[in-house]
Length: 281
Image 1 (cartoon, rainbow, N blue to C red):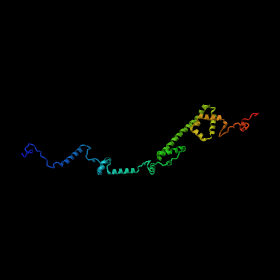
Image 2: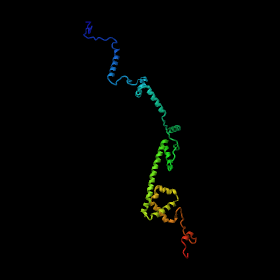
Image 3: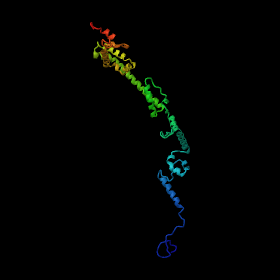
Image 4: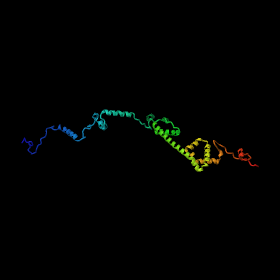
């Protein structure tokens, strides 16, 4: 019975299982695990136990910590050369970058350097904008606003040119309106006072304008179109008529006659000539 594989010398009927020799199968376990992993990698697309599988080979040269933290950013570079080119390009761009200083706490030198880099002058004269004829006051008023807004020389020039173009367009429209008003002046006046009286009204109106003695006022009336408003002309002509036409001689204003004085003090010569004393006085 000793030759029977399940023979028990104690005779208790228990079957003795033969144990494998010491160390048997230990060396085969890691190999079996590797075989299973390889089989899974082959069977499941995209599965790999190696984090660098399918990645550029140069990544294996990086320190493990750097590779672990930056793998997603670095795996887009096919080679170290591509990474180097991108790094140098970025460095050059940073060298040309504009540093914006703290406008409240920054130094004067930092602010001046920033303004110079951006093309923003320190004073309004730095814009080099010459006022267009007729827009001197507007130009003088707008340049400080350019500076406050932080406009560059190029930006300020474009805004100013746009302003000038708009002004010219407005002036053209105003001139057209003045021409239309002037053309409608006489027909409108004749309609109000009659065709026979219109020439006399125009004559008195012109005398009133001359009597003002200020060419700028007359020009302003023309520019605003008020000089071509029939009712305005009638109003001034009425003043001339009420005051007496003799007081409004072209180019000058004749003095009115002096007021009469008491006989004890003597009458004025002008009054005596216009109003000779009656007999017995």
